[in-house]
Length: 95
Image 1 (cartoon, one colour):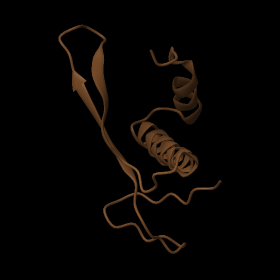
Image 2 (tube, rainbow, N blue to C red):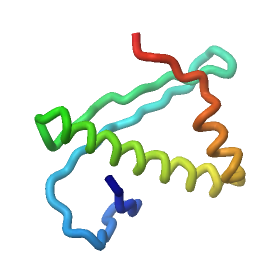
Image 3 (tube, one colour):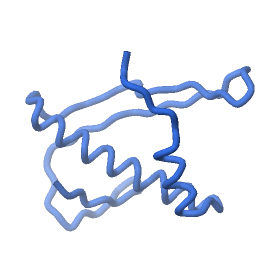
Image 4 (cartoon, rainbow, N blue to C red):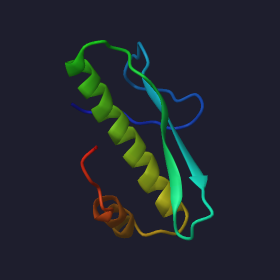
């Protein structure tokens, strides 16, 4: 599956679009040094079928990661350093 990614309030896609799915990511500062808190606070799937939802998840992953890397680099982070940040985090299986 491929994803055409365009950012901004009114993106113009080359592909004809229909339907919409989304997620809201919220972060917070904490009083604990070097600790942030946050999570996905809302999700809207277009499909009710698990297979199509997995496709929607893959697209949202690509959209977010492309945006994240672009933002990292725009704030004087190196591209390779940003990619390393994505794979270095101590991810763990959901409990």
